[in-house]
Amino acid sequence: IWNEPNLRQYCENAYTVPTGVERYTALLKDTYTAVKAKYPDVKVAGPVISSLMDYADKYLKSFLAQPDINNYYDVFSFHNYSYSNSGLDNIISSISADLALIPENKEIYVTEFGVRNTAYSDTEDERYQAAGLAKYYLSMASENFCDRYYIYQLSKENTRSESLGILNYHNSKYPYSARPAFLAMADTVTGSSPEMTFRSTPWLSKNASVSGASAQTFV
Image 1: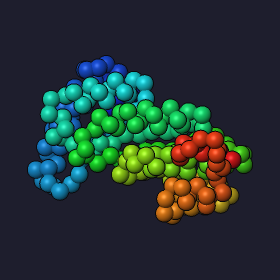
Image 2: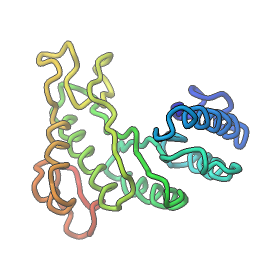
Image 3: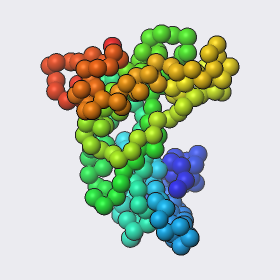
Image 4: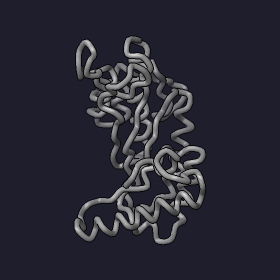
């Protein structure tokens, strides 16, 4: 329900806690009640917050403190992006602490995650995106953080910069053809375990001095 209500471009007074949170929870409760009255089996997801870092952490805790709020969503959803190899451990650590606050009877979906490729013509950027996307997913999956993951996005069509798409854009030389990130993820998700996938994918290399998925480095 809604999109990133902790950002001011999507919700008035978003940065004000608790005012922004109260506005969103009122919307969520009304929507949940209306949806369940007509479609009782449909899963309702919220709060769809942007990231679980910094100010979003404060927003999340205020959201969970709202009266009876856990009765008004079935799926806890959030968005998260990784923009650097060095920052991934911090992201995983923050997510781990925050998701521990979510009731055990709730499913958890990452409804947006991605890694930017900043220039379509640069081979290294393509490799960075491919390795980063696979590493991000495997780091999350190895910790069993979430029930579902949704990559953002399939194809970025309106700009040549800061692309999150895993298919080439519509007016490229090969429209909608697979970019390295698409192939890396296709290879990654077919592995039977994160450990096996690490060994099989050409997009990652292993730092043997540290254990765990977050020890993987970009090639």
